[in-house]
Image (cartoon, rainbow over all chains, first blue to last red; front, side, top):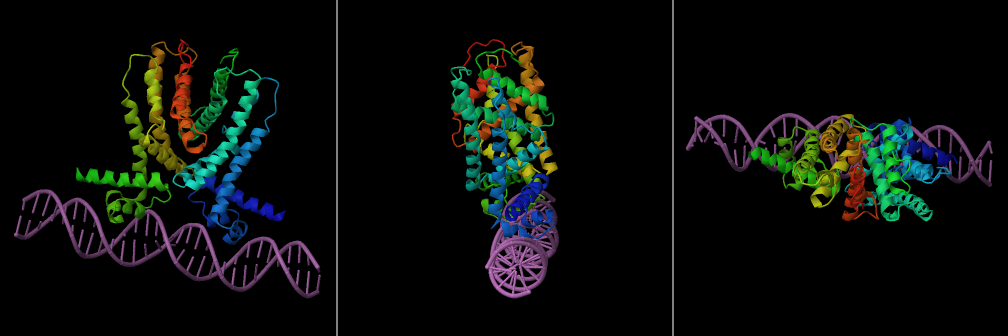
Length: 198
Length: 198
DNA sequence: TCTTATTTATAACAACTGTTATGATATTTG
DNA sequence: CAAATATCATAACAGTTGTTATAAATAAGA
């Protein structure tokens, strides 16, 4: 039990360093110093840096997936899908941290095939969640007939990822309301009844 | 003249290393070895690594901007906007390289405020190009009245960035035709006459 | 051609990296 | 309590990093 907690503490320290100073400066010594100890602790709970890196990356997926699956099933039709998509947006500090770590890892994975593969497997899990919800909507007859859920799952993730990146790379960035508005308008375009168009 | 060419050769070598092995392993020695010389050459045309990095990053924006401004003005209404957006998609090897370098830099910029600022200034330029085209369309009366070009410029860039990232992070990734289809369908949703709905 | 400037190579520096081995301390177990 | 284990600190390793200084080689200009 204490093993697990301490291991999570190391990962949390790694997250803080990555969010604050980036993945490059997240050395074993920097992570150790972040939790006011030495590298002996870090190396004791993670065999090597790759194991620590992959664990921290896995936490990104785990947190996103947990947040998505925590979205309640509402009465209205596509509202659940919209809430699932909003999970990806940097709505609070926690989600902003997830985004920063995710982007840092993604850039780090360029040129490292094994690390990029981890990213892809992570993305595949999240895509499956969206695909399943889309197929539910289609089975309920809410989706326009010509919509292919397999394609639309990618499109939706692309949109929320892009909108999330907007908060990092744009100066005239979108407000949270505008981010939500873009998502809602897009999803509305997928539905049959074009009522409440906005 | 030869100065300029040689400087570009160094930057090209840096690009190749970044695309192939990532930004972390793009050390001064690795870049020098890529062009079969020593670090003396690299240091002679770039004062330090930051200058080289920023120059390579600036090339991303320059190439994208050049490709966007090279899009011809067609007869049809929104086709130019669509072609401008397609510039961002990884349609060929050159665009894929641009994407990889861009993503590598973006991840590297997490936690480095000055580098992220460069990204933002680069993104602002590209946003301006989109904003201008959107305002043209609005002045021509092609856009739906409730569309705000300032918001839509961000939304469009978010969509193409997200769709581009799809080619990196997804296993069941979108085909080029599907990427284009998503862009075209989204832009069609912005237009007044909903003819040629696909 | 002689001189000046540009271009490239070499070697070394201090600082940092991940990792290992070893010993000390603390905690749990029998 | 004693023994065994888990936890942490210290120091050192070999390698890499960006950068500097210096000198050799090449090219350009008078």
